Length: 302
Length: 228
Image 1: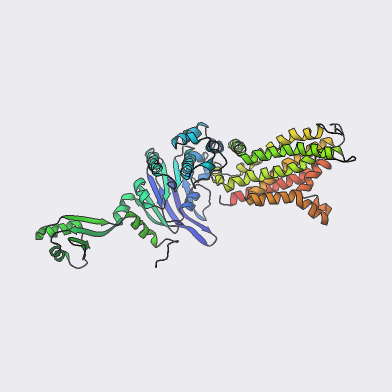
Image 2 (image 1 turned 90 degrees about the horizontal axis):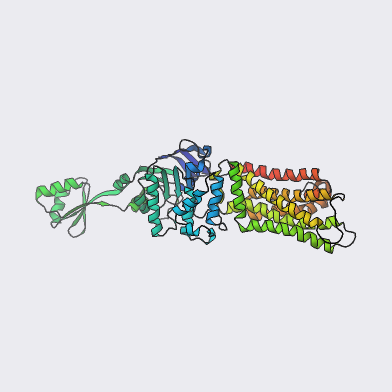
């Protein structure tokens, strides 16, 4: 369990994280979403005790990260791809960190196998592809067999196979009862991986809700109705607060009425209806809409 | 936990090329520099001084070693993971100082006696006046400069700046300040290090030690305060 408690982080006059408060529960994958520059990485560094909050505090399993006796067993972090010295082999990199964290030597082999890098163990990190470095980063995060895992943009650089592998890994970690927080700036990836979403923009909390709730909210309230007698149906449905438009022949877009009401009216009047579909905006669009007002680095509309 | 930090720094040192080269260069410089200088020294030059000439070159190698051990970890981003493993942070610095100082001491203990006693004309024997001070001073100087360089590297977190500062303090400032005041120059790391060999050991060792300790203490303080 990770508790971010009213955390604010300022660098000089710039406020990067602004009164953020949320809890990451164990046993599920929590997606940490926000546009670039929203404060995700800063928040993650504060959870891991690397940056100090200007105000508020962060606890991991009830205590500040630095107060744990075995910090690497409490929380494992992937903060940026390639935070290993390029001149060191993958194995030496992991061995040095295992020693620093007083972890048994065999964990090095365990995590190398877990991420599929056994054959590259003796290779210098500088020759790795971005995807291999990302795997090494994930191996480093898992070194302490931690109860909580924090991964900052782990999908970056992974090929499609790697993305699928990561998805299964994250689900597996959550199924084992671990706390899993994964950041991304891509909504589409999170809808495939996350059970719960924490969305921030410009350092502030925008949403903290189950994935399904977000998906439901993402709908824009418009129902598409297909009917061979669209003109008659249109007259049936029009009323105060209801707008009906037709973009294609035989298809009406109805706003202001739900599916049940439309179906009942059509049935009552004997107008045939061939399709009734609530329209969902794409999740990516809904996410962008949600963060647009808060986004610091948006492009200027023409 | 501190033992783990020590083992970690030991693994880190030997798993990169640059520090291994710096250690090897220091050893070669002590022996080869001393032999060449002793062979080329005109009559009348103290054979002991000539044979310690290589130590002066080895100072640059251990300066690079000390700075790189600190800065390469920042430049690669590895420091964040190291601090995640050791959140108290200062044990990391202590472990680095022990490993850098220890390895430098080991190399110096092996190579300095070789440079002083082996071969060449005008042999020096262990019983001669000033020989023990010179040996101890040579080893102590190299260790002191290596640790001073480590602290400086951890303070500035940038290899070029760190090496520049340490080389300046070792090789340039003593002469520069000496033109103004010889008394003041005695307190510069480079001059104090030389005087450990050629003059008296302890007072000069104390000066160099103070520099090394100040660098480490400053780095440890900032380590606590700064975001990693």
